[in-house]
Image (cartoon, rainbow, N blue to C red; front, side, top):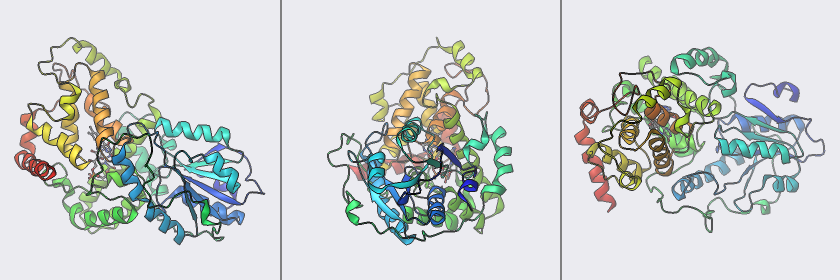
Length: 461
Ligand SMILES: Cc1cc2nc3c(=O)[nH]c(=O)nc-3n(C[C@H](O)[C@H](O)[C@H](O)COP(=O)(O)OP(=O)(O)OC[C@H]3O[C@@H](n4cnc5c(N)ncnc54)[C@H](O)[C@@H]3O)c2cc1C
């Protein structure tokens, strides 16, 4: 495929147009979100271009301590994925350069390796988007970015969708074009520049000396990386998928895939997961239930963050929710907790406390509990605005998969009714859907869940 035709691929956004520099010595892949060597459309585009231009390909990964709410827990998980990236890229003849803060400058790296063109991946969060806009201004060669972490390129959806009901038919119409097998292509010209271009080994603790929040401990039981992600996927497809529709709302069973941290850090690609689920021997209804969450709900979240600039504040709400909250702004809130009490799981509600502890101790909370958890934060906070801000802060701080479009969409769903519909009017919540301790606790074996978290807590002491 020639370069002109390739640039028209709907997954690609041409950020800085122009012909690749004929004097360039390589094609540079600026790896940001898609931290993997397999099922990575951005890397595939870089390799295809390298082969077309007859140049080697090098991937540049430069972790920095500036991601809002990121702390030691997140960076440790990121770091544990690096050896798999290095190994996978080497199998594809692609070079790998890891540079870390304060030696993270893309433009400085370009001066050293002289690329013909730079390819990046996409991330709808505002800070990452800002870095790409800056890069397009600063680079002297073309910059393309590739939407590598969704099945259907998010820009094809064009605008913010109201909910699953409106986005589902659009996604389903586009799936035959994008949910297709891909080939693993190797770079024809191997990268053979001296290793001295590495400023670090993949195994070093690159956060040493960083101005970083170290108050949230890393999670010993979670190890990042593509190999671990594939193992989790395999286990889920063989043992969990069959009963997904029945078990997915049972926090005490914990039989969902738990693949979200790997997706968040880009250690596994969405096509790999969707293909594995489609090929599984599980009943069709189970596959459909999983793909509804994994494609429709997940890509609805990406759509929300990409097209609603208020995604991390209550102002992202729909007009019906705004009107409804205005009617209830003076409602009495009989129980109020401050941030510290919430963070330390010191509420009167044993189910909520268990959920909060699951997140703090394990870096992950079950979906059903996430819904309940956020709704109670609304009930126990002085205002909708403060509830939203507290939920974002706690979620981003403790969840390994936090700081993700899914997190903002989940919080928006629970607190301001985003992607939901108006329900019956009630105090504080207005028309936003309510969840009570009594009814939530009856839907699954909540005693068993609370007991499991209690055991976990004792094991941590
Ligand atoms: C208040 C709240 C906060 C949340 N915070 C986050 C977050 O920070 N990061 C995050 O990745 N998810 C978040 N979610 C969405 C969902 O709870 C998690 O993605 C899911 O629990 C992860 O577990 P799993 O991988 O076992 O999911 P599975 O059920 O096995 O699903 C597989 C994948 O599909 C996607 N998915 C599943 N359910 C949803 C959903 N409801 N919405 C969007 N995508 C979904 C996820 O990528 C998930 O990893 C939040 C939801 C709520 C209500």
